[in-house]
Image (tube, rainbow, N blue to C red; front, side, top):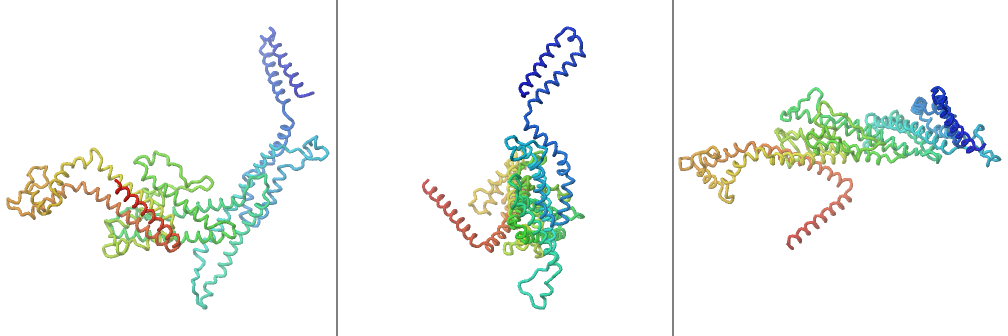
Length: 576
């Protein structure tokens, strides 16, 4: 019978059972009523089952047949076995492509005699494969392939770390000029053979990726080259972040006390800073050389990847460290940080907890800035404009051009730019603190308004001879407690010089509590500005050396814009 006829017959049976249930004897019998309810429920399910289309039955047949096999193939244990095989033998990467193709063909069931043939194509013998089931299993196979292929960039980066170790520690740098007798010392055949073997492993991994890319089925949304590049970026960001975090801390584990007024402590801190930065410079240089070395063998833009990801890591840490200056006091622990423009879901930048030995700073950028501020403190050092550096009283240089040249070598343009950004935020923070202190309603500035008025009146007019001003003021001062100079006048035996000295000493003593916050603010701002000047000089030097034409073009544009602004301001003032 037709589906609709069968469905109507079942519905008539359901209505008949409802009529039977209204009989008096059946209505009072609970067991019979329960039996009739169960029967009606089963008949309703039969109506739904009868209306199922044959295509849906075919999909269910396919899904149930493959689900048991896919539980084994798609399991985590099976993926781990394949990944371990790839890591142990790079040549296995070339065999992944035929394996994935056969797996896809098996899942799509190109031929299965148990599936009924389409009546319209009965003579052709083409099996009916449901598009729904095929799309489902194609997506499952694609996800399986991505998980298996994720081990390839991890393996490539593992080989890259070995190349970094060879370039940093084992291979001797060859100078421009080498004497004939010493050529043998620079040969290092064993180390160079190991380096060539590691490079060959990278090329084998890349060959497998390129093979899958050339014959990648259109039904699968897989991009092998993109998987390789994203995987290398992810591992590079992780290793660089770990290196920066574990290297850039400048407080000894045994000496956690900070004393910037102790010369010995400042010297030890400066030596530790130089040792850490030198080690980081060698490590970052080895990273960059290694990724540039394998870029041709891996088929990637190594230098571009290095610059982009290193700038992203530095920018993210600068942004997170700067939040403590932009958020108000008390909000740093209660407010969720805003989303970062440098963070990515596919290539995340890791975050690390604060170090117990330096809890005031969030990450390595804050620790680097704090370390620079410690051994350039004005209480211990003297800044020399002629030598462009900070010195101790005995002439020992603590920080100068060589310090920022080493910082440039270790952290590049991105690192110096980040330090400049943090110093700018620190300056703004110091100004905001002083303005808040000055404008506080119950602060010291409001309470000392009368005192400042007396000093202003005593020094008025400004054009008068300073000696005469002091004598006049000393002579006109009363002996009350509210007056600054409570000394006798010059007519009572005191000389004008003594009166002038007494006025200044009393004024300094009374305004000392007001000037200390101002001097502290100015000292910190000046120190940060001098550090920014050194950073600017270092960046400008490398800018002119590495790209002089671009520097000249930017400098010309800058001067032209300033001249336009000056001309506009001049015309506006003359017209008004």
